Length: 141
Image (cartoon, rainbow, N blue to C red; front, top):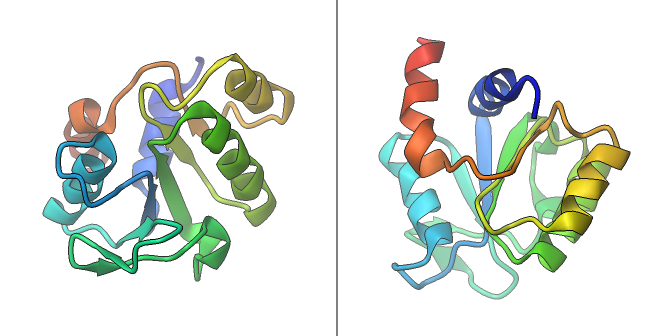
């Protein structure tokens, strides 16, 4: 993916973040990503269709419920079939950037990104925010 560094910097420059795929299971990567944002004092909202609260933060049911979608970068830690629907919503809402954690994409998801001109707004293909996030934050300082 060309311009990956720029997309990552743009992603982490957003004033707000959302995490789709967090749960009450502390061992799941969605919850680990949510905690990563919390530990760095980011303004983060978990998105969950059923839970009212995760890690002490009130959830929203869908990214369509984001108060400021055009100012919110979204971490996606979901199965590829779910990811596709989130990308469609994110595009319609004008979300500035999305980060697909490893395992959140398949061929259909990658095709959607390319066919809809989202390559400059999507991080995909393997990078993990838990591994790369702090280095990107340092590069923004």
